[in-house]
Image (cartoon, rainbow, N blue to C red; front, side, top):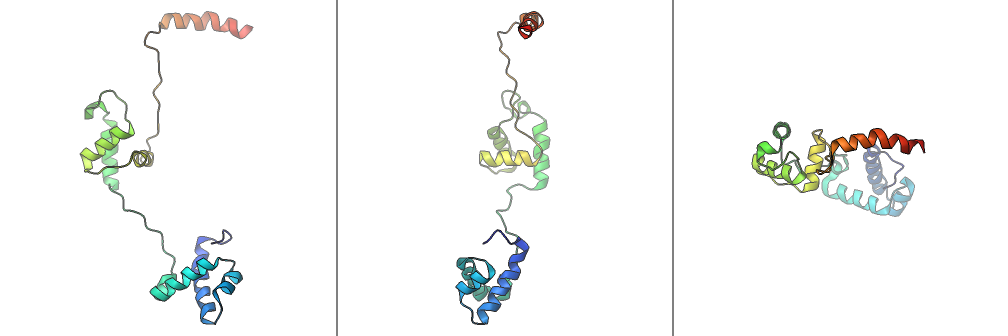
Length: 156
């Protein structure tokens, strides 16, 4: 298919393909006249032969139905807001695998980790990386360094 047509134009093109074919045109001439590929014309005519005029109608492409409903998604958000610790995980951080375990417990379905990320994005959760602080760090010495040494470094 050519990029010069909008998706809504293709139903008109499919109907025109059939009209031209019924008028005795060859597929390569139809493709050339409409600016399409011969393969596209061939598939359109095949669809028309098998399904009739209904095969020319533009339909929204269907995808795999979601495993969890919108109501379950809102329930999931409520559970996530309770925190990871309340669901038996060590630490307060939600990871994709932890969320997937929770989805499995709540709804009995399992997702690929990439899909879990998409689900979280869909409900408004974003990837966060926790700030890392050195445990052995002395906060008073750090503050003193910032107040005394950093200004001297900026001067030079």
